[in-house]
Image (tube, rainbow, N blue to C red; front, side, top):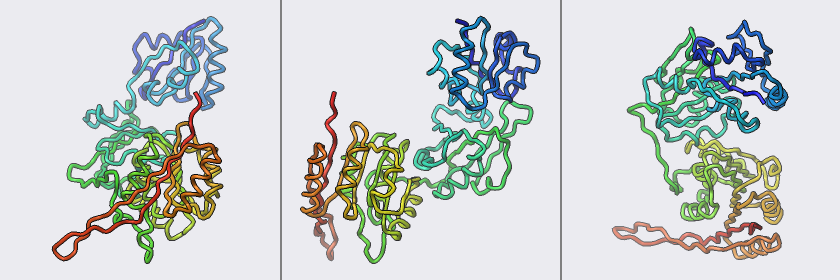
Length: 408
C-alpha cells in the first residue's frame, strides 16, 4: 500500500515548499487538490484530481488509488490539520503523512506584529455566523477564518448589531502571495462597503481605551427590558441562578427555553454554553420583542421563535437541557416531547408557582419514567425604609429537575 502525503501550500505556491516536498509533488502518480492549488504545478506528469468539495468522493478515490503502486499527494491550504482537509482525511484514511505549511492565522498575526498564543480562534468558513457574539464576547484578541458569505463587511455589521464596538479590525488578504495586503480599521463602520480579496483572515482586537461590559452569572432583573405595565414577568435572579445550576450545562450544550418571556434564562444559558445553541419560544409578541432586544444587549445570538410550544419543537436540535418557564396549558405534551428528545445525561428544569402545577409536573414525570427532585425556593431581598432596612419576600417558586436514569 503506497504512501499518501498531505502537503500544505501557501499563496506563493511551489516556491514556498521545501525541495523535498516539491519533489514529492512532481514525482507523484496522483496529485489531488483544489483548482487553485493544482494551477501552481502546470507541468505535472502524473494524474490529477480536482477536489470540488465532495469529500466523501475524495475519500473513496483515495482508498481506491492507494491500492496501486503510484505515490499520492493531496495539496491543502496552509496547515492541513488546522481547520483543514487533513483533519477530516486523517479520520477516514489511516497512515497519512502530513506536511504542514504556515497557516493563514500564523501569517496574519505575524504581519500584524502580534503574538497569538492568547488568541481565540474561530472559523466561519462554510458555517453560519450564528452564535459568534457569545463565543467571542469579552475576548480581547480574536482570529476569524472567513468565506464568500462571512466577509469582513458582514462580520463588522454583525458585531455592530450586538454593540461590540470595542473591537478594531485587521483584514489580511492573499497572505504569502504577490498581492498580499494588510489593512487596519479603527472603527467597525469603516469596514462596511470596503472590498476585500476572497482569501482573507480577520483579526479583532480590543481598542486600548475601549469600555468592555462584563456580566457575571445572575444578571440583575432591572437590566432586562420587560413588558409594561406587567413589569416583573421575569425569572427572578435568585430563581434563575439556581435553575441554571440545575440544567447542568456544558460549553457546547443545546438548550431549549419554553416560554422565554424576557429571555433572561436563555441569555444566561448562552453565556454558559457559548459553543452550543439556545432555542427559545414565546407566544406573546411584545415579550418576544423585549427578548430579542435583551439578547442584543447582552451579546447572545439566540434562535427565537414566535409561537406556542409544542409548535416548532420538531425543527429544533435535540436538547441537552430544557427549561420551562411557561407552557401555555400544554405542559403534558411539552414534557413528553422534551423527555423523548432529551439527549443522554440531559436535564429538564421546570419552574412552578402553584402546588397544582407542581402536582401536574411530578405526576407527568412519573408517567414518563423520569427521576425528579423538587426545590422550594423562598427568598427575600433587602429594601430600604427611611434610614433603616427591611426584607421583602419574593413569591415562593418550586424548581423541579428531572432526568433519565441512564442504563449502563
